[in-house]
Image (cartoon, rainbow, N blue to C red; front, side, top):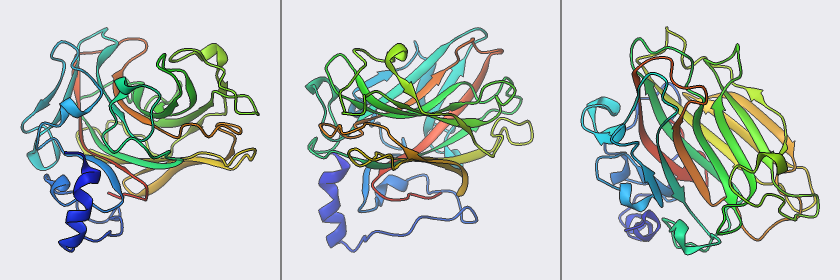
Length: 291
């Protein structure tokens, strides 16, 4: 059952919306999704097998799997195992809100145009991890066609050299100022308008940090029609890492909102060693989530 369908019942039971945890507070419960917040759209702590609800799950031939003992507090989590030289070690593709094709299978009612979305995950790099944060981690986007044309993308991925230990914001517009969608396919880079990168403040893959869980929360707000007032920002362990504002993500486009979020394990140049990283406690929300 989709999380949205459970929320009225939970509200009756007295589970009202709660403020986000701060960085100083404890890590989430291993069974965080058993008590979801009212504003949450999706929660996956991997204690139950929710993988069939993602519209696409790439297990990379067994390299990216739900496994016991690899999550927060020794719970279930997702284990991504790169072999040396490997580029893709699997992905989870989640759809929410109004989508352009039934293939996307949103996890909610599929009617909302989300123009303001928060998403959070916990990530841990195994001790001895090398090579930076691993290029791709997560992105949110607005799909506008069955061919995956994108009106915007909010990339949160690895920084460019020499900043490969850091995550960076890299927002993209896929429309002209009138809101006409320019791309015709997924990752149509030639038709993207790149809005400017901004590196985060926390070196997640620094040797002093690998082996520990980090809470990464991102927030994208689409601009109002014909205004450059969009926002893209992220926090690490509750502390603001980077923020971009004054963004014109989609011009006057309003047909779809943010309707997909990807959680990825992709290394453009290939992994420098055989090694693992772990993901857990994914939440999508219309308000701040916290750590």
